Length: 72
Image (cartoon, rainbow, N blue to C red; front, side):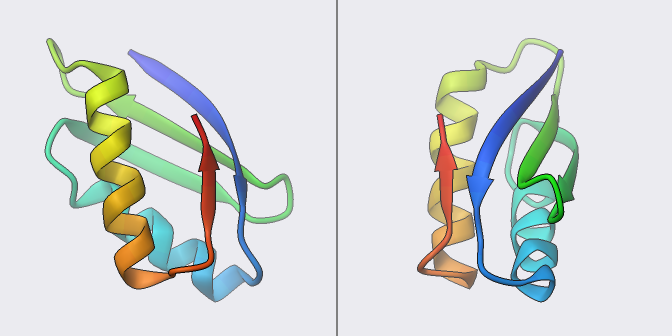
């Protein structure tokens, strides 16, 4: 399953950090962050609960970029 989320991030480098943090989260198959559109497209593993996984994604993104936001 794929879902798109609106994000708030200050720079392209921070967006890349968010993308890597999301990709390294359990339950995420793939993730692409588009800094210009301020969107995060997440592909979830089969059987993963998107709401629970996105809570973990947000926590991991906050670790690398504390002022970023994902609008869940």
